[in-house]
Image (cartoon, rainbow, N blue to C red; front, side, top):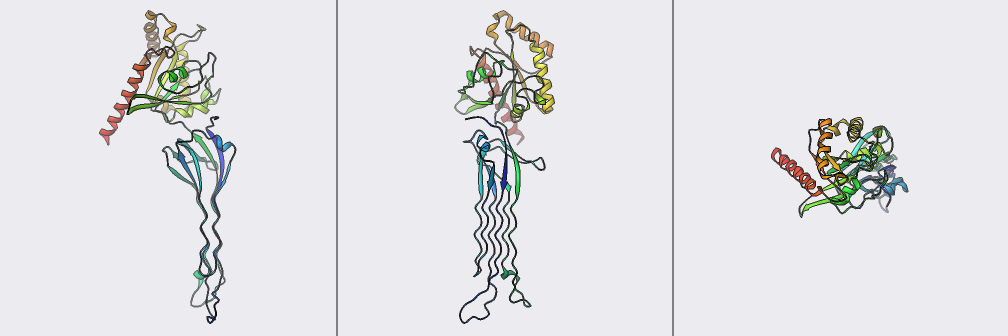
Length: 344
């Protein structure tokens, strides 16, 4: 199924039913009085997060959603039936924005979470409500209120604990394949990953984390160059960033230090908060260097960058160093969980 992470839809809640003007007419009751019932309420439109859905592709085909209208009131003080709600299922991690105001309405981050996006109109009042001592036969009823109508923008941000960051062909997809059961496309040309892939890394039965392979970024990504801002947003929910770097570029001309600084600049341009998030350097493709050169090369890069956070040497394709990296990631999350429990 094609991955789609943005969609615009039009939602229309149901109008309320009209109130009824009616009078009781029965044999031997000449002055029965008013008995018009109220109109039913219109149905509302709800979004529901469903973990069984992982893309917004269905909204490319259906863009308009309308809840049922409330039925009109009837005689004998019978109220009209309320309209049925419209329930729209969306992937977990969907952010909902009102197009007219550019205001975020809600964030559906948990399975089963519901969000009211358009409220149905109230039903009108029947003429029984307007009876008084001076007006025994009112011929007045109110119409139902219109339901809310909105244009909504849906944005899907993947839910992952770890986000892989790096230039094309740094080996991010290979790393995801090496540590999880996910199978993103791998090839020897850039931009093989055109959509985010999620993989579950299971350390033990009850200890695991989710890793996201984000498509490769290039200079100008924060302004939309290349795959750009379309995928930078998927880093928003991650708790840890792994900056994957090709330690031995085949062309011999690429400077890993310059690449790292370029992506730091792109992160800052998109959202400065991402730079404050824990970010580890992962030097990939160490199998392309002689064993005695690997740590020496990595230390030279770390020294030039004045890097203060953890860094690792791995070969994703040979699965060398990947397990110690996963263990440290799990330990990092375990420590975060313990700290949160202490502060609670």
